[in-house]
Length: 360
Image (cartoon, rainbow, N blue to C red; front, side, top):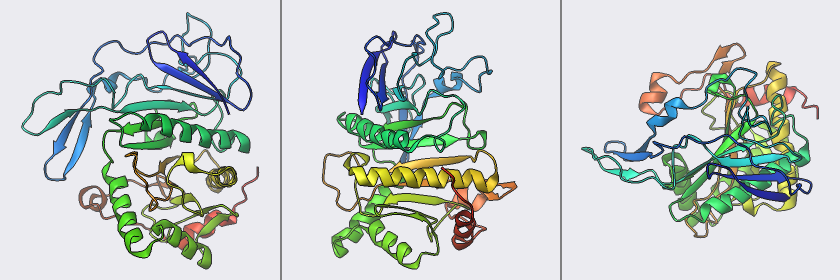
């Protein structure tokens, strides 16, 4: 993996990654961040026992720009500035112009509930310079590079004292709220372990303390033994519709042997995960015969500089579809009570996904 660090004119960092050496004379992109008002804060929800982030300036972020203006398309034209420079590289990572969390956050407003500066870090990861591309359409070695990049960024963000959890994720499609169509994702470095990862890690820790083995590794072994919900398997990685799926066509991808962080993956695990990821994405597109919308999130161990033998890195896909022609919106029982109601059986959706070919 080759890297090149560049400072944007507005002080934001830009890191280029490539499978090939990167030319020394690639210049910075010219698009500047808003200079004022970037000061997010947190407020404590006293009944739910969790923090809520507030960043009202994000209302002004770029939203579905016209085709002739793409802030992620490389440009060396100072009259048409974008986030990315021209040149030969594969992946770009840069500070978000409109972050929900910021390392320089300070002086939160007073309220009747506790408030704190929303310290943390938000980065954008542009998967490819091709604005018409997709994650599933990338070559396997490019996807392997992306897995390395996610691991590298996790290591870097975790060095900040205020960062307690790092979450790489991708939203794809307007159905899940995407505002820019260029294939990209984000990485958040949170000042706490968010509620969902915290609950998962609590369950993993309790199980490991009694069984001496990672919980998800045991569940994956059971899924592989039964095989009914498995849609991809290799020596080191698996993709399956979990028996406990909350969403229709939900899929999990994981190394078969537990690894706490993306940066802990061995080369053979990373290679098999790249193939699993590409297979799942191609199956999604083939089943619906269109670019399939989803939220993909990679869950790893907390970034608290402790050992986490209980944690098992994995990705979860949350599609918005209930059936092939009907959107899945969260219902009252799901939004209000947190009890998910799934209209489809995991066994049936796994069977559908297995039935379509993923042609590389």
